[in-house]
Length: 237
Image 1 (cartoon, rainbow, N blue to C red):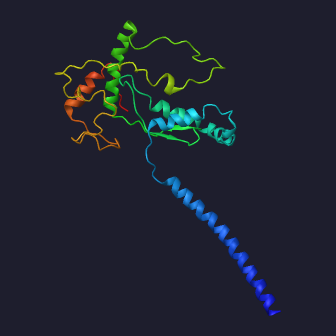
Image 2 (cartoon, rainbow, N blue to C red):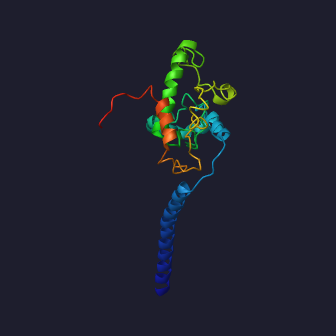
């Protein structure tokens, strides 16, 4: 009887150990997967993302049948993805803009992973010069062309970026010619993306672009360039 009892206890303890191993192994694997998710990932070239998009272009293939739930789940994040795209749209004075992108491995959704910070007086002055250039643009029509809407038919598949658009040279940026004497304080960097970001004169706090302090010659030049958009009335608020 003692031997049978010992064998039964051993069997119970073995089963209990197996049960605990399963239970805690699953938790540890979840912990490692979450730590893997938080791990810093290497930046990949844009060709990698284009291939993911191209491979998932036709979702009717059977090998993507498990991804369909992921695509449906991603729909609720589409408004945020569109917002980030609009936020980081190139300005008229930029020919193109390269941004960091966060994407799902299935190609279900992609987010622009950048916050477009600006220095307000520079940004206002840039749009002030655009106001002048846009008036000339209405007269000359050099940069904008009329477009037929809707651009695609309902049954027409989306065109592939790499095949149709990648090799096309973007239209030239709209830049007002600055005077090398009057605008000397700003003309070297005025139309850069996030100007003075890596400048070593201490005008900006650094790459985070959170705080700025500009000297009087730069501020006076920016005020003159932005004069078309600034009100003559002083707002007490």
